[in-house]
Amino acid sequence: MALLDRAIARVLPAVPKPLVRALASPYIAGPTLEDAVAVVRRLNGEEKLATIDVLGEEITNDDEAREIARAYHRVLARVEGEQLDANISVKLTGLGLGLDYALCRENLQSLIEDARARGNFVRIDMEDSSTTDDTLRLYRELRAAGYANLGVVLQARLRRTLGDAHGLENVRLCKGIYLEPPEIAYEDPDEIRESFRATLRALLDDRSYVGIATHDEELIEDALAQIRARNLAPTKYEFQMLLGVRSARGDELVHAGHRLRIYVPFGTHWYEYSVRRLQENPKIAGYVAADTVRRLARR
Image 1: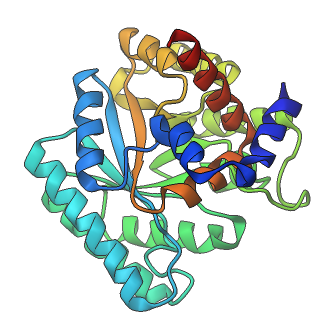
Image 2 (image 1 turned 120 degrees about the vertical axis):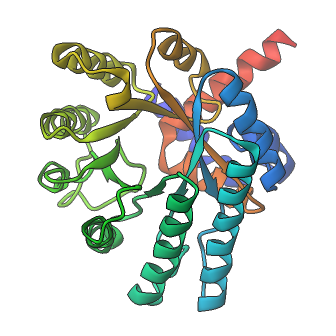
């Protein structure tokens, strides 16, 4: 099955763009904020939370970084105006990290302050390993400055992650999709799973709030066992999944009384996001292909 997943991901650039759009449509809200609002409203009606991401983090100058920040301010205003149960997830390269650390901090801090004034929350997404130190530095600096409505992401794929986990108050824990050199990242799926389990144990032992972000059934079951062993209340953690991926399993988690947050990306850069996401994580390509076959079969 892993070979098939990789084969599917590898041929994506040769697939006509309209077909990629059709394949990716269940996994992206659409090109506009209106599309994202409609999807989040539906998810809230299913008792699911959401985190909204503006696609298009590739920026080349200060003005583009500030425009992405403005786009997120618009998201926060709409979330409040529509009374949606959703927060935002930002990539620091989109806010200017690759251009200037101070510019990125300025853009991020303005979003955190806006979110705090609206009773909302900002998650700093984790990108490739070249950004890990600065991402954790910014998170720690701003939490120390009193911004409690801020979280970060850890990737179990990186060998350093267990050591990074200590002292982080609010974390989304995922496997990670970026392909990294073997000296800094695990390549074997079982090693990545063990890193995920160990990091989750460490975070829960530290009483961190954890967004358990995985579609891997083995890791979901392990997380449920850890939750039961600690007798954690549902307000002390949440599960997280991508829009359109393993929706039935997500429904089961919600019906069992667990909080579930769905990642809702939107924007005009849907094609670049779709191809990159599927190529960097062939397992997701397999989920997409299997789900597409099921939908076609039902028709």
